[in-house]
Length: 270
Image (tube, rainbow, N blue to C red; front, top):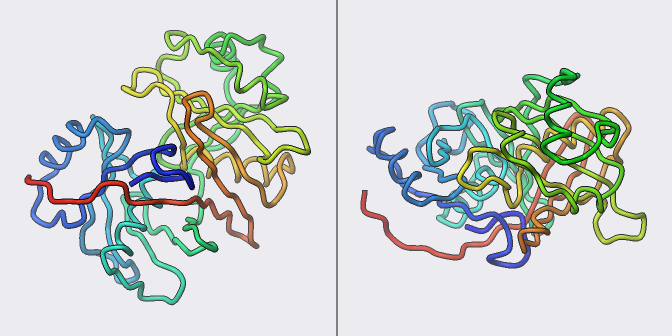
């Protein structure tokens, strides 16, 4: 699958194994390591009565309780394979983090951002490391917050999208931290924010498009009044991608959406 883009091969790729019944954790992890993608998912029958399907999400070296682009890509694959949700208009994905609702949003799918399990201030020592890792003066980091919804993101707000695009990170200085950076575009731009996410030590040190970070950032920005209730974020620009994340807050829910497309389909022998 290619997720969070209208242009195939310009989003964030995801491998989805549609029938994972009978596979062991070791087999899943081995295949996810082999694909060498940021995530690979495995679809299974649900164990919760309210869920339509269950998904297990693996990076190349560990299992994640939740991740954003694997949620949208897995939902797309499940529907493409003939899945019919129990509820009209909304499907329910079961993952290690709990139940996640996914709905159609025009021609896209969108998931309801799961609650943050950690939020709030970041220690000054970590902010100093982040500033050094981003090669920015400390005062350029206007705001920061923990945004943990599975992955342990730290969100950083800069003054402009240009500052975000100009970052040339020092990954050694960021080692051990997962950092997402967001900055506003000018009022007349096509998108409202520019996002980049850095995962030092990972095979892909900069992620093309990151649903989990954007979900946490949306809750943070909208909840604090730093962002509007509906906006579009661009991500992956410096990597030659055309990622677009569509955010919309409706009452108590923050929906995070994007386009998905199937690029390769076939049979895998495991």
